[in-house]
Image (cartoon, rainbow, N blue to C red; front, side, top):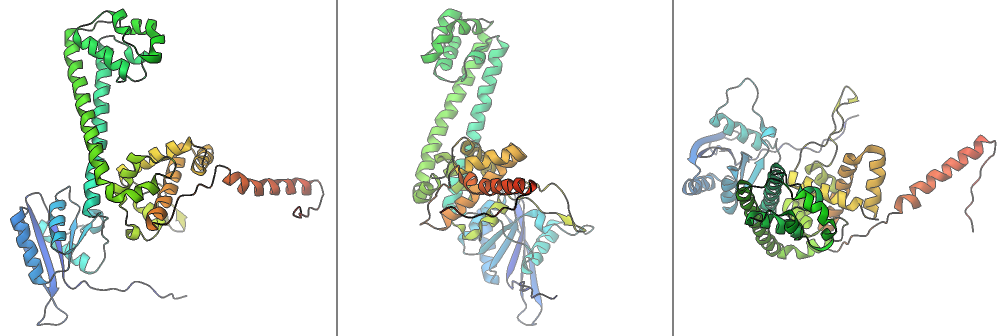
Length: 422
């Protein structure tokens, strides 16, 4: 049976493709030949990636009448070119390099790559990557830098713990948080020259004072001036990073002000806190027209199983692939946090985890959260409504128990007719 295809081949008449490097780029522009209908003219030039050269490039593309400029996502070198051309009013597309692989067996040069990219773009055989608007990009820079700072602080704390182990100071065995109030006081005293275990243990605060005998044993070691020097540097670095994190948090809060209504709606979802809401908006923005359906958003975030089929058989294990790691990290944290709550998402996590394991449950909850986020951001009037932890029990489980009872009675030779009670 023949079906009508929805695709319509349409040539982009005025298009340019850029092959970008660190110091220079090659631009291929293709436009119609006004003197010979049906023929196309092609111009290939090399430009430096300095600002003045990029302005010259923008002016030349404007003279040629180019409307769409396509470039590969090459490291971070694409960013200044993309932003400048975007500011000059061009429709700029960033494409995944995997989508425009050159044909095997053919020569590969920057010039040929630019020509190939331009030809593929004019026939609309590629699709653009998601590049958020400038306010969201600025927020994204801050939230991603915050993640890096937290990782650096964690690495420095681990170094401090290893240093104490080297000095036979087993403080982390007794203290749950080495850089808590009590832990910091004891380490500061060690750096200051105090070596007496009893005096050090007496610095414990709050409920930790119940463990003073264990602390005295843990603080008996061979802590030297060498260890004190290194530990002092590590503590200072952790404190400096923590100061930077607080300053970045304040900047994030100020950058989030225009998105306050969206943040308020996201905070209604179980497991989402202020930091998670900021990361979500930074990674996907607030304009959901870029993702026509929740499935598009889940597919872009790689929270949907991949489909591979050949000869009528499915291949692979349905893995989702690698998507946005910052978004994936925060969705995993949301799923784990929601799993501890008495909500629909919490019960859904527990049901899936019992049957298919925690990892699949995290992906499933992450996709559910993305679906909720899409609806909340698509409609400013929508609000989150929790279906409740008894959602499955009041629906699915009721039907299952009813079927089981009917089968048991029929196995005993009864004919079962069900009538609703008055």
